[in-house]
Length: 217
Length: 348
Image 1 (tube, one colour):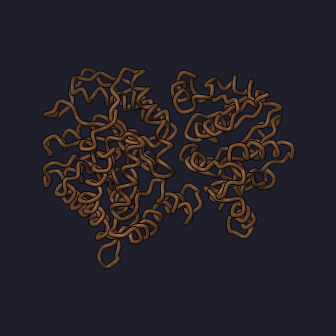
Image 2 (cartoon, one colour):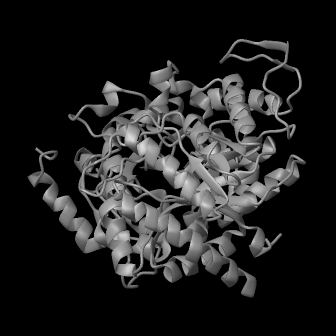
Image 3 (tube, rainbow over the protein chains, first blue to last red):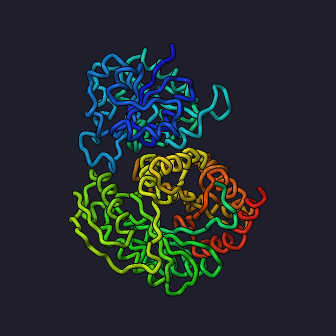
């Protein structure tokens, strides 16, 4: 059976992720913040193989849900609606969109830990957040192809990390494990990994070097 | 709707970056503004079609009031179109924007063009007392009002972001009967659809990555215009570049200056500095047009063809690109690159 991917957020990142997942052969549903009609034409032209629908339908039908909405908006979603599902958190704190939020800028918890606490009945994995959307669009390569780029993945439950590893690979990137959700701070804005469009070897090095940096201490 | 290559419009764009002068010292903001006026006059003399100046409120850019600088250029030039790029409509008053650009249109004998956008920076919001959380509402309401003002007839409008207007005439009226206006978008599909809904031409700000990603945006714009029964105009493109006598020199300047400005801005947003490989990718087939005239012409012709564009604007002075290199870029662009791009496209 084809896995259904649900993408919440139909902005720059959401549309590119929908392009990648449809190209990889998944059945893809996508929802924006407003009425379905608002994104209908965009989806028809930019992501013809995806289905525009409501947030509720995405949550209901998808096997895997990718969060590609502004970080400050995740609490508008229902945790119950995503219970039991793999939820991939691709969101980042962006003060210009999200406003100055102390809860999102503290250094004690990664933003994904907060997201996971909110969706406590789901299985949250952090991935697809650190590469710019234009690079995500440009860079997919087949497994083993030279110069294939890497995506960092962090999560607390091996089964779901493994599922995300497979997804990232199928999208055209080398998956690199980056530890637990508590470790995912090293993939956030301000880290050496944020914006990284590099190979597996280089990404691993950036993740390892993190503890040696000022930000990592 | 493939364009006749002779009709493709070529322009240069600036935000008023502070250049280094001959001694390697950074110009003051006032000097940088006068430098842009000099460059506007040069561009007009060399036959370029447009100069577009963008509004910013940051230390590294001198232009916060594009139309004032454009007015300075207006009275010393004959043919060049005087555009903003962009005017941050969300944090401005549409009535005043109309008034200022209609005034510029009078000064320039009908050469003004207002290019509206939401801006890639957000400094203007707190500066003018707007709340960033109203980002979408502000633009939506103001573009609606501005569209009415463009008719140059009495306007009636009401909304949440500004005082209502009832049957109000706004002056000066233009001699053309309508101010030239466009919307610049940075790649949000929603912005593309909105521009089509209001019937505006669009400029795509393509700052990084392959231009190919925008092919579907061009289709989106055209399909949206069809759906809303508005006119779809030829697409404009804005990207960074530097042109020198040799590829090596231009790429070196791009690394030192364009990359530096990207790194500086990216840092504020938490992005790691652009590495060598990423930079080389941008130069080779991404969105930095750096090279000798033939190299840049080949790349531009390919981009224009790929996006079926009707207009290209080169952001020519990013970072602290020295004055001489800026002038050289404009000269080579106008005298070598543009004719060569037209020739390459005519051959197709």
